Image (cartoon, rainbow, N blue to C red; front, side, top):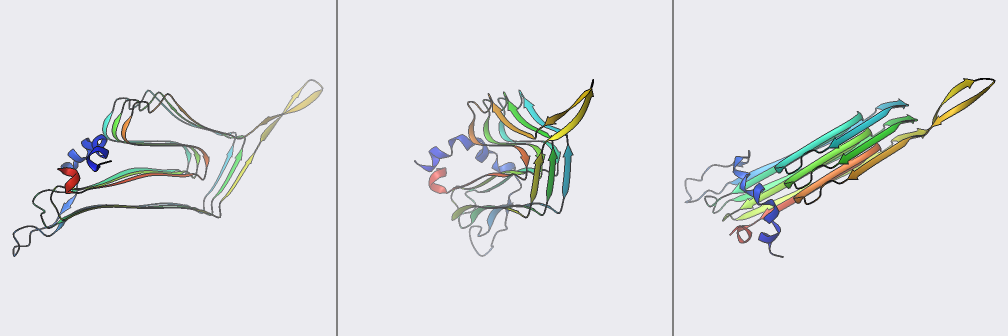
Length: 249
């Protein structure tokens, strides 16, 4: 498949590049054309460590209904319920137009998610993450992060380097996720109930539910959805596109 066909769903993104904060270098006065580069970079680290959370009959609910339907462009949605959760949506866009005959368009992303030495105690806790009738018919670069619970990390990134006639277009993404030395205890909670001459115990288990219903239908472009319920989860969606002169003609 030719590159120009692959990029059609993201045509709006490339058209919007000129409004971004890409850096264009100066001109070499001894040369008839610039030799610098247009650059855009994402460097992001999410770090959770040395934390303790205890939930007793706690209810964490992240819920989106009838939201971001028919939206277009660069869209980021973060919804979270609980403690010590991290979410992010980021885009790095670099363009080198015809003036950069000897230059380059360079876009890069470096993402690290690290969770270590955390302790999570759940007693009869309910975590619900629900995306319902949302993000239908949307187009472009869409990132949805929903988390219910604790110590969850989610990330959506887009990296685009576009070059009309420049020497080079480079897009790169480096993602690292690391979980270590974490402890999660999921146990039932119980309550004593005394009625009449006989007492009894009521037990409530831990319940984690992630539900995606009637959502993301007829969506187009770069679509990333992360739904998580519980503790200590890591999710990432990353897209890197380099469009050289052959693809942009």
